[in-house]
Length: 155
Image (cartoon, rainbow, N blue to C red; front, side, top):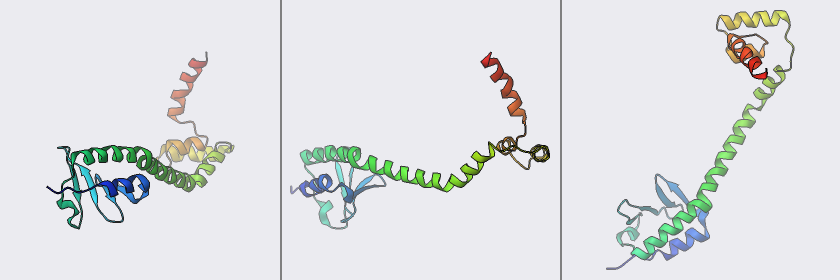
């Protein structure tokens, strides 16, 4: 029976890893839209819009694919996903920076008696939350519970 020669795909996977991606559990070559997956039976499955998927892959090349695919995941795909996550995290931190700076500044601002009194009332009636109340200098129940414990730890 005629077999599909995977050598060109394997060479591309090694030489140009950026041309491949994972899509719904399949390794996808973006230019050709050929998709590869190892079935639970261990057989290499190929999906393609052309007739490439009609030929079987011999066992030795299927094994070579498994090794190349594992290497691609470790050397290219996971670092690629990590870089994307780092960019998203950096963008989120950048978006949050003004609020973080306002909160940071509030930690060092002395509130007047009237401001603390208004904040305490707002906290008690539920207009502001615990974190905001503490930023305003309000001593909350939570702070009172933690303070004696801290004092005991330092003794």
